[in-house]
Length: 300
Image (cartoon, rainbow, N blue to C red; front, side):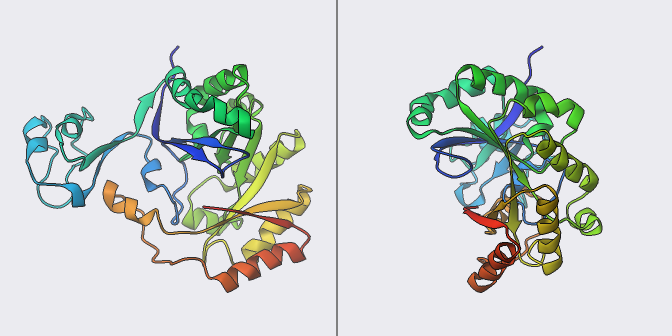
């Protein structure tokens, strides 16, 4: 059986998201709908057409090739409900105003791309990090890629929200060299209200990863009014203590994802938050450190 997955970006030469120089592989699809999501184009598992209005020259070429009557000259350019995903409009646009978001690849096709940077992985102790979206949505694909990485002796990491089904995902997770596990809102009602379902599953999976001694490291996005409240920080500290974890990666919120909402005509709200306040950042870090949890600062 040939497995495929929709990849919406591959970022090369990253020095975050794991040790050394890394390639970041972004997969589409996620069970959560975080209001602060930095990659709103990742939430829908299906590939789609993004519209960059500032590049459009109104040539009409996209209208001429569309057989679905899915191209609109007013409002957002593509009617996603009518689009059959033939991508002819993308090919017809000479100005790059229409772009495909999500390219379907096989594990072997993905490996051919990331292996171009093998010398950088070897000299820096880097490798490949799978992110998204939620990479475990495509667990069979991911397992195959991880096996290929292991054969090539390429270090692997995953960034997960913890929403995976354990019985289906354990084999793939055990192949990873590192697991970044995001803790977001640890109040069940708050999680359900802001992020969706799956809170109990996330906590259960965190416990299983630690109990099996898998290489998991916990992270928390720091978002004003959502994750940085005293109650939520206390809940995260409590979980880390129960799991005997001594440090956490903190990810500073930025609003770069909001510009992408218009590109895909997404439903994600625009929070209107600026750069995270430096004084509040110090207080959040201090709250963890006062509780005996070392803070590692990651770019986001």
